[in-house]
Length: 141
Image (cartoon, rainbow, N blue to C red; front, side):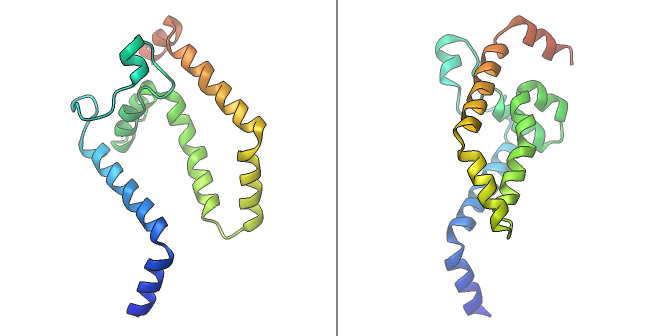
């Protein structure tokens, strides 16, 4: 029995390390609110220019999601909240036993058109996020 556990640990070291890392990250964001603690990273673009990037609000949104405050999380960063189901789907597919599905998804993600579309979405969201229209929309939710 102990030998099987040692073999499992040796074979899955990377997976276990990633899991532990994300577990620690989840605990930090659950117990510490990025609005109240200064040790969280600040956006360099917003610090220098005052403009928000597509990632601004992700830490606050993640904290809100961990506390089941979905509307608040959406207000902090809608793109992040909308992307979570897709990211979870990719993780589950990556751990699936179906090699054809994994290869198909890998080809789709590596496809230049997919990368281009994602970059366009992030760029447009970054531009939109700094408009008065967006700020009015978010405050009225």
